[in-house]
Amino acid sequence: MKQPVPGIIPTAKKQADCCSADHVCYVKHDTWANCNPKCQPGVGSNDYDRNDKEGWTCEIHGLVNDNHETLAEGATPNELLAACKTHYCKGIDEAKCISERCSFYDTLVKNQATTAAPPSGTTRGTTGGTTGGTTGDATTTNASGVIPA
Image (tube, rainbow, N blue to C red):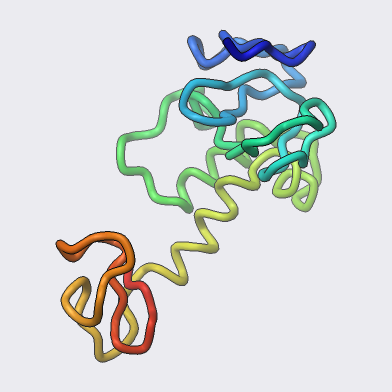
């Protein structure tokens, strides 16, 4: 059984609003989340978990908007980032907000611009070979080696 790191609350994922005012419940992976003052994605990126071998996603468990309402299923990356910024970054400058609190959602917004549509002249999932599936899944590449979203 995985032993918790001192100061980490492995049960935090059971409820969305479980942290003190200066902490946020960040997701490490599907079975681990805890309250931290900030979160940097990646392996060993957080001083509270230096021996980390898996990395943190830094997604916020139970993300809510400024009215404490859960966002609708299928909310866009822009809506998720806006909710993060308005609810979890009060009194924090924009750069610190993005780097320490909302990096997961900022990355989603940046990635949507590069994966929103297949490159011009290609058809999604129908050209080229596959790198991980045989049924036109998300790993299908086109003739130029680009992986359509």
